[in-house]
Image (cartoon, rainbow, N blue to C red; front, side, top):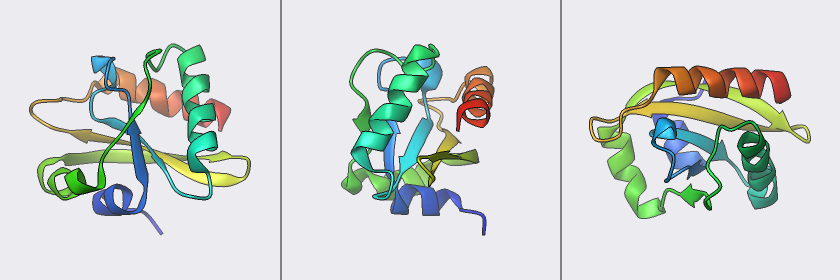
Length: 115
């Protein structure tokens, strides 16, 4: 069953690159099955592919999630598997943090090729 924008926001930890603005409004959506170590492995692979900055990844705080659900325009998501556990990458758009179409396409290709 497809996930909605709010499913991704409310049911997953949303990791983002707060430094590289070409990654604005792009998120890795990680649940407890993949966990922190799985998330960091995916992020390291993305760094090696020049798709994530070297700075520490940030996580959307739980108290900000209602604002995300209200203010972000959902673009779409893709899924991958890390050690047979599913994770997602999602794109949203926000007037202050517009997503980069080309970078989103790069994320989708990277996940399809590697996960």
